[in-house]
Amino acid sequence: MTQPLRMILIGPPGAGKGTQARLLTEKHNVVAISTGDLFRARVKDPNDPLGGEIRQILDAGKLVPDEITIRMISERLDQPDCKNGFILDGFPRSVAQAEALEKMLKEKGIKLDAVVQMEVDDDKLVERISGRFTCGKCGEGYHDKFKPPHDPAACDSCGAEDSFTRRSDDNAETVRSRLETYHSQTAPILPFYERLGMLKTVDGMAEMAAVTAQIEAVLCPNKGCDKIQPPKMG
Ligand code: ADP
Ligand code: ADP
Ligand code: ZN
Image 1 (cartoon, rainbow, N blue to C red):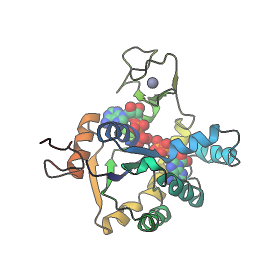
Image 2: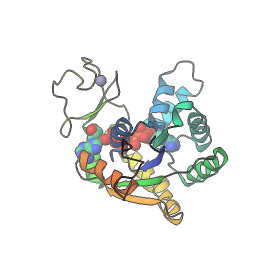
Image 3: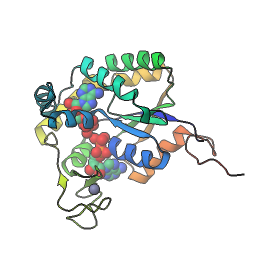
């Protein structure tokens, strides 16, 4: 058995958190938990009493209140599929959330392996976000320039046709607001994790596979580490 891998990916909008979380989950048999995806599912659910309120917050590029977000994550971490490990993508996004997560993990008896920050320049983020689209069927992420599908009308991953979607908050105005929110409310969690001695930084400007390799290197600096290597047979 490999050890469970429990990590946080921190980075501004468009840094590549979702892309890396997906690549790592496929390789290491852990679940990726994206608060953005959880909120988008709630917006779509006509029975969610907070769906309308959450939609307005997402479209404004602001943060959903900590109380709602923290409760949602706590319930998600209690699901049985998190036992093998998890990658948090997009949580925590404020100091209050980071403090609540520390407390929650202690109560649940869970220890984090790493907190990884992905650094990308603002200009590059705008380019990444404006070209982003996703397969609505399987969730595979694409980019007009950096990762176009082989067949422009079909998903490489699941083959679905005409299923590509673009996020309504990936427009110039909301992106500006999301970047401001990142710098004012999320970036302050970096010194929080640095003080705890947990923060690792990778260069998110590199190519996708190179970023994955950097993350794996900070997770397991020693070759043969059981967090990322399959067990040796015999
Ligand atoms: P985040 O989850 O941090 O908002 P995504 O993973 O959705 O970011 O990536 C944003 C966009 O940039 C997507 O279209 C994705 O295909 C593309 N992308 C992600 N990582 C890279 C990379 N290292 N180089 C070039 N494009 C990337
Ligand atoms: P990004 O590509 O900007 O990283 P996400 O999909 O992670 O986007 O998040 C989309 C939106 O969902 C955010 O702009 C914010 O409104 C909301 N959101 C996501 N995670 C959180 C969080 N931890 N706390 C509050 N709001 C969040
Ligand atoms: Zn697909």
